[in-house]
Image (cartoon, rainbow over all chains, first blue to last red; front, side, top):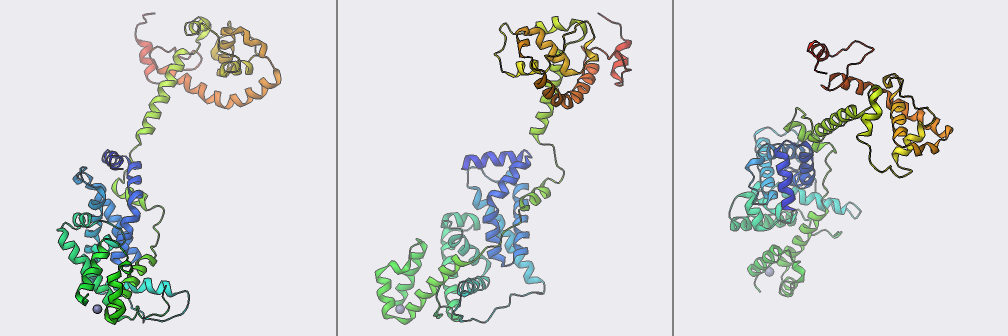
Length: 184
Length: 221
Ligand SMILES: [Zn+2]
């Protein structure tokens, strides 16, 4: 896997466009997934994902082949997302995320409702907490790998993830999502 | 277990990706403490909600758009370049080996194998397609179409293949060969004009600027 990736990276550096396509296709799911969960908006996430790959391919020489590629790539994605979030904070929000009132609908939308509540709850977290939480619970990365991505000590990662969980749980309790009788 | 220990234990289990409900101490405390029970339920709902979230799909051309930005000026692929070189080389070699005028049989004999090929291979099939044409080495080969020249030459090398004469089959296959042979013949003619050891086309004025310059040089023949 790693050797294969090193070979792919070498081909990319040589200007092989087929290799570039292969590299992007291999990691597009992970990168776009993180961007979408971080930004909560499809177009913004696609822009951030594209920017991530463009930067990664242009700066591929700065990747140390003795280390894993994935944390390096996701670190770029995280930086792109934080930049996008900062830019979003500066400009007046045209289409702010309208929070729907919690509904107790005994129908098939219960699953979607829960997913939406979690999505909204995640958007209230600090970007670092959110990113650490998503990398752990969604990308299923280890604390060490997340520390590599976020370029901070493992202890800090653990603290951020614990805080993220507590805040999310509090938020769900406040929104009465927990009390729903129509659990999915 | 006290409530603060409950929270610590809950975080530890989640850190190890283990289901909190599977821990007996946690379950016992949650059964007695409404606050911690609520926290346990909220944790379960949170993890379930993460699983349920859908991810929109990216467009199929996402990777292509990225590569377009990184390398906007498309460079020829190495494979295409090699293919071009290999084709040119093959055509040049073919042009060099091809029969040229009345000396053709001798030229080809130098490359002929000592043992004739087995019946049914591509050589015999090609011989069969042209077997109805009588070999005529007195007439300049350049006046004939390329497939006729090849077929005749092969028959000269492998006369025993002449028994494969089937006029109907030959006619059908010859029709299929013509569209391929005609443009290839033209290409080979151009190559023979330009390569140093090729002969200039006798019937038409050369179009390549290289040939007149060669013609002005003293002949060493
Ligand atoms: Zn308690």
